[in-house]
Amino acid sequence: MKDELGSVARLIDELKKLPGIGQKSAQRIAFHLLKKSKEESQQLARTILDVKERIRFCSVCNNFTETDPCVLCTSPSRDDRVLCIIEQPQNVTSIERTGGYKGRYHVLHGALSPMEGIGPSELKLDSLLERVRKQKVEEAILATNPNVEGEATAHYLFSLLKPLGIRVTRIALGVPVGSDLELADEVTLSKALEGRREL
Amino acid sequence: MKDELGSVARLIDELKKLPGIGQKSAQRIAFHLLKKSKEESQQLARTILDVKERIRFCSVCNNFTETDPCVLCTSPSRDDRVLCIIEQPQNVTSIERTGGYKGRYHVLHGALSPMEGIGPSELKLDSLLERVRKQKVEEAILATNPNVEGEATAHYLFSLLKPLGIRVTRIALGVPVGSDLELADEVTLSKALEGRREL
Image (cartoon, rainbow over all chains, first blue to last red; front, side, top):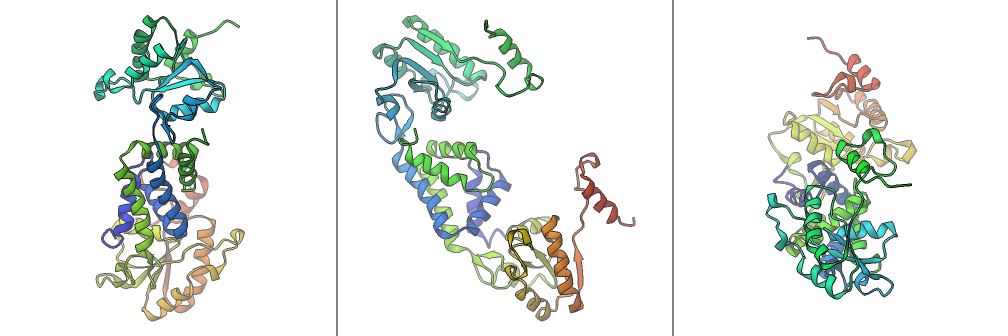
């Protein structure tokens, strides 16, 4: 089977490299593409190539962008005084989707992780400090992930940013909306108790 | 965001058309591709285009193939007297993986489904009957899916093939190996009881 359908096997191998795609999903997608018209598959291939041609990093916030600086950095309607610091470009999308944030962003491209050999020099910290100084930032919101690496990074950022005399805040850790207390793990629940607010 | 990252949004839209890929997975894959080197993404795009160039249907068994007839149809080591009838090309892969089947295949490219307007004329039945007559088939194994459409198709095939004087068998329906009786649904369990075998 492998010898015969070399091109299918190669496609399955390529698809398996994608996140969240195992052998079965890769197979299913490959057979789906085989069944679809040539035009549809070509369009998928073309958009993959296209995205790599057009997208670069914003020289200000390090987010993905087609124009440099990106629209979030150049938009006049956004507040220079608030800076949200996140690990990955996709986190910008998540926060933008809330519709409630109107400040600027700074993408670190990672989190501190001694286990994986990621130290401060691997993160976009120099440009962060420069921005905080030049841009008259009044509040830095630490929106790194609520896991070990994200927490460590938040602590490290706090120690860097606090001496600059600005407000440094951390997004709330607690029980997710729409879930059930029964389903919350102990750590989340104790964070939720710890972070309780006066009504 | 959408205006700026047009090419990313387009890629996410294309990825969402794939089976089992929702908004979140599509986003994850798109950002993964953005992070990877240009060469890696190009290779994925190229294998997608490549597969559409090379693959056609086997004129004998209707399976996907790069050579016509396919290697499974031309292999001299396989038994012409046994014919396994399946719904989709990917089912060949599943059965080949068992390593226990040495006969030939016939892909129907679908199952009877009045709800979706798929009748006998939509399936590859003419060539099936012709093969059974010419190829001296002694046993037809009905390996259509164990669902309503697959069962209906198996019954229909039985009514077509039995009059030709050959053995017509159906793959066993029962509890899957490695699972737990507790987890089996009632229908499966009654099929398993119905199909019990003498030890």
